[in-house]
Image (cartoon, rainbow, N blue to C red; front, side):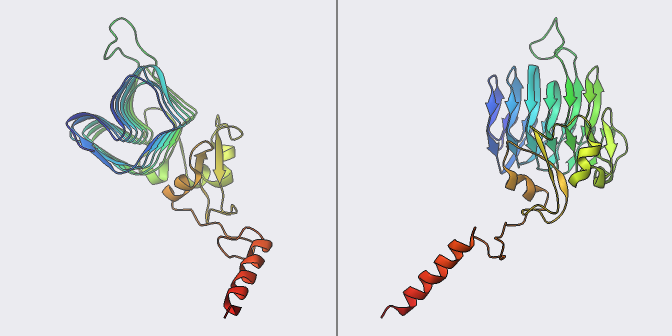
Length: 275
């Protein structure tokens, strides 16, 4: 998907709700560029994800949403592509004037000014369509992994937070290769992965919303970052490069029980005996 402004892999300019959606491929433009939504005004984005690589030559560039504003939220969503922009660049949201919760971003983020691994600019100041009120700007129970680079106001989680709140949110200080963030808590890789996430990522609901990824799980070959229960598990594990195809107890993919395996062997034997 290409364009100048208000470009998204699914929606360019959104004033409704986007849910249960996903996008793959590449998205590029100038400003208000998002892997899923370019600009979202007064519309929630939830239970959605983007695997797109996103690039913008201007401002408000995000892996999922370029700019979101209003008494709305990005929730239970993630972005896993690389993001490149100039100003207000984020792995999940480039410019947040709303609420972000229970979401995450991975991949690499690169920009010039106000660059964050999760959010570039988090601000409650008035903006488009708001002259007399300040919408909320919060980030909570979210995390980021991957590398982030930039020149000014660069953060492992948030590049710059102006009168906005950041709570119970984390970034991988080792993978991001940056120790600073305007909000959030830094953790080491082994503190955010596997069972250790339960004890270090305070505020995360591992009963209803999140689940850990552990090496002893049938579909993972090493510990991984927490994933969202309501979204595609295989896609999330593949994004972390920890996914392995599940096998039956005998190590033969595709057979879920001894009876199915036995039936297949008998069927092949009968077929071979036919004249």
